[in-house]
View 1: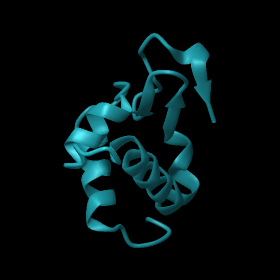
View 2: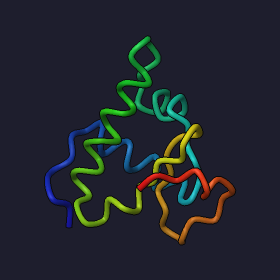
View 3: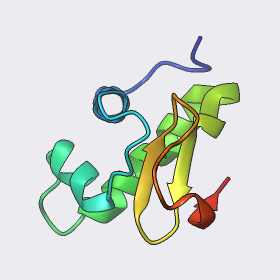
View 4: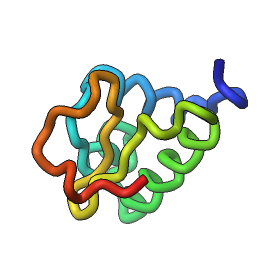
Length: 88
């Protein structure tokens, strides 16, 4: 269960990442998926990632930051190259 209800954009982000398990998505990809194509895209992506982590609670560890590349929702143990750049 989620620790708090999801806002619509946060739900959209979770759905987007869940359709791409173990795939690193750039901030640009996430911004476009959320419909943030103006200058606030990267900030909007970071804000929604933060909200999603908060809502995921004890499951937030499955949402990884891949330094210099983007974010990944790990459902299958993480299989892409780039694990060395992970941050918790």
